[in-house]
Amino acid sequence: MRTAIRFLRKGQVVELDRFEPTTTLLEYLRLGEHATGTKEGCGEGDCGACTIALGRLRDGKLVYEPVNSCILLLGQIDGCELVTVEDLEGPDGLHPVQQALVDLHGSQCGFCTPGFVMNLFTLYHTNTPGLSRQDVNTWIAGNLCRCTGYRPIVDAALEACRNGLNDAFADRAAETESKLAALQDGLDVRVGDAEQFFFAPSSFQSLLETYGEHPDATLVSGSTDVGLWVTKHLRDLPKVIYLGRVNGLSTCYEDEQGIRLGAGASYAVAEQFLTAIDPDLEVVISRIGSKQVRASGTVGGNIANGSPIGDMPPMLIALGAEIELQSNRGRRTLPLESFFIDYGKQDIADNEVLTSISVPRLNEGQQFRAYKISKRFDQDISAVMAAFCLTVTDGVIEAVRMAFGGMAGIPKRASGAEAALLGASLADPNSWQDALNAIESDFIPMSDMRASSSYRRDVARGLLEKALMEISEASSHQTRVHGQREFATGGAHVN
Image (cartoon, rainbow, N blue to C red; front, top):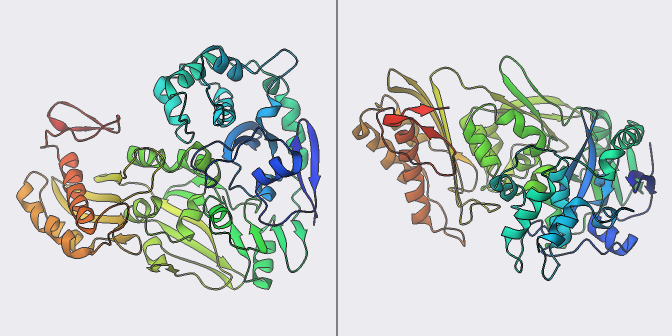
């Protein structure tokens, strides 16, 4: 076991063996290093002012990802390269991203600028040819500016990324990869004592043993939720078990049945597997948080926290996903929909850990649709999340699964509407009416700051009708925006 975290900083290995379990990376930078270029804005991962870049090895290659340092726990950067805005300027001058922002007037008050610089630094290092303005807009959706306006910032991004990689980080990439590989020692990491600690196990055995000994410990995966417990709820979490180093917990793969997602896989890793199932998954995932949130947040964490408005569970439930839970007593599997019992209550026993999610592929004749309804298009919490999976033969619906978020205390299927839709004809909208009416009795949603109960019921009904209209080849309605789906003449669906 190692008693200090280790990470790469300015080409050198840094070891830290004394810090509070809930110390955030932003606190370390500003109060420990006095690296005050990284700013604190919202303190909840929304504004992007605190964005830094983490260099990680993905399949042996160096990848730079943006993260919100305000909610990321310091211990989570073990084995990474930490890059802040202070590190970018070299002996030859400003980094290409910085210089482009200067030349094209991409900063006014400057408070948000370091976060933009670091997020655009990670975009620069994707080395993506032919970037469009929409590509940049999507990438910076998690960075807010109230002075400059986004046009000159986007202009600067396009200018900086036009000529390929040409910075010191690219020049020494092979050296950085070697140093990061040397940090991957496979040891458990524990900083603290029996009463207060940050523990990062490297194996399932270590995880289950320690969790069994300390059932009061808080499990942390991406910290995009737990981080707010610290910064906003001011909760004291003396024992933290970080899941990000457990060997195999982040592994994703495809097999004959479908895909298996390790519960510790970030959205940035999992989305390439999920989006292969259907284009709608890609669209919704692109609206879950921001690039920073998706680089840290995990699909397993989204499920395990049991939120009634989580975006992933309705889609996975509609697809018939199963989850695996493991403890020192053994392992078990269950349908994802059975995991959610009541508001704040899940089917998970003491010391049990969610380890994987299995998602079947769509079969021939199955059609999938998913919609997220929120006040803002980017980086907003859903008022209603809806997902539909229909099995259609000769225009007749033979099987249906539909699930909603935001309509009840848990992500939930609309069982009455499902039953009413069986045998309906896609060519005959009159045969849909019983199912559309059944939505009214399937849910009694609450009213809150995001939407009223009546609005949610109306939206749920409308989304079911929208899905049926889109799937029906007889429909001539084009109901999508932002290029989510394309429709040929007469409304035929084109993947």
